[in-house]
Length: 310
Picture 1 (cartoon, rainbow, N blue to C red):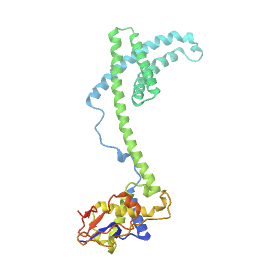
Picture 2 (cartoon, rainbow, N blue to C red):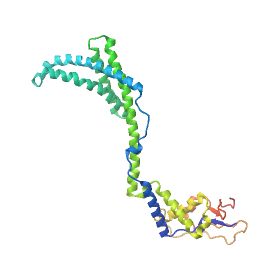
Picture 3 (tube, rainbow, N blue to C red):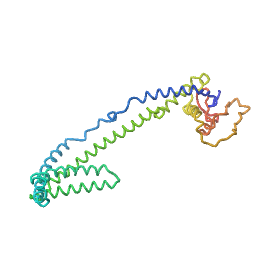
Picture 4 (cartoon, helix red, strand yellow):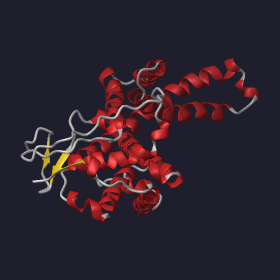
């Protein structure tokens, strides 16, 4: 039984290695494909809205109408009383002044309540988060005060704004979930765009390039007649062989201390017939550092750990 080591594997020439890189680049360009789109990352998820939400929407609409009527009455009284005091008569008729306060404050109060609660939910670890909560509390206070001063009973005054606020919080949760799904799609799309842009500028930056290059190098090594005996080598041997080729190209990037003397262990003069082994000899030092014992290969394709045992 004959034992082979990595030193027995014939290495590639520079032209052969460059050819491997070109084929790896061609394969990588095919994998890059077309420019990604957001639609590719959208998933068919369940609808956020359910039948229960439709019922809540009906209740919200009714509560909003009642609450809005109370706000119109409340702001009509306040705007009429302040029209002369503020001197607004010089700029606009009294009816316009009162109507602006009555109708503009409905979406201002109800809409800002939902807006600021959403901003509170999506903002984290910043002082703005608590400012949004304060603004939402101010909107809630205004809605409650406007309804309480409408002139009807206490329970009737609280009922409409309570339902409006409660269902508004449900609407806020649905909006937050929708924004979260959109943010996840944006994140995946941005990651794909980063890879695509980097790969179009330099295909070697694509995640699959290194795998393609390693495959091409091993295939080229096995195409050499002198290396046919290594065709069934284990994965660990293949990896060391390919890394040796790749590191040989980048030896000039090694920043270790420069030396002008290299110690090379001489091969043994005699090899026992019952356990014939060939040491690494002149193997590149960087490979000796990556493996504590030499990687050997029997002629039958099984590796050994250097002790003669497979």
